[in-house]
Image 1 (tube, chains in turn red, blue):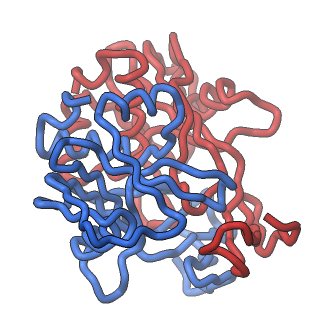
Image 2 (spheres, each protein chain N blue to C red; image 1 turned 45 degrees about the vertical axis):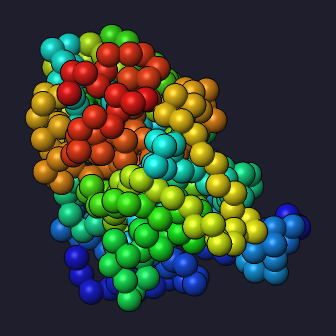
Length: 178
Length: 178
């Protein structure tokens, strides 16, 4: 990599950096554009009675409402663990009895530099004083209902499905509930 | 959505569009930046003797070599099925006896507009006349080896793990091999 890195586009949420990788044959002499944003967290959390906590929200990039698990960027002042607890609470009002990092991964190896830290939580209970955000609705589903949402094509978030495998392989006995 | 959509940054591979969503309270009056690129394919393919076909390649966005399943953009002239067979062949020289779409999903709901079409292939055999691409190396692993790569943190592609769940729930008996 030479030293011609520069930011060629910037927003409040992400930037695009132009870099050169002349030591890689197929990239020699060509600019490469990397999308840079803070690392994030993605949280698979189960309520005390075993329901999966999903959120329904409007996603401008798709111009539609989606179902997904809570997620968000890690602030510069916090750990992934703190970010996971905060994002889950901010989006849903739930706090987990146990919430642990089960690994980290990438959602788009070809273009994004950020890591996503994967969290698995259990025993979640909603704060009765929680004031929901206007544009985010909490949806609780059983594992059976979730599986149906996936096989019917209604649930589209690949990373959440990846979390199921990670949780199962790291902690055991997660997928057999589904 | 009003009509102030405009492309504010453009490369050969993706563009950034600025859009407004004034009917959504939390977005009122603020620009939203969507990353636009063609839909893609991602392929979980097993060789005739049950090994998973991975590729090791240099990813400029991470400035490192990664292990992942074959994937790529769908050309404007081809179907997802054609793109999946082409990408698998171009990157690895393998052709599947059976290759089918098991669903579609999103890798980054917050920012990307593209769909990824998920494919599951079996009975893959490598063309003996295949000339490998200089910067992509084929790596075959058993399901047990793959599981170890995931739990050790060496394999980081969440979408591939999502494909495992999709394949298992759509076709049955995929995950129990792991």
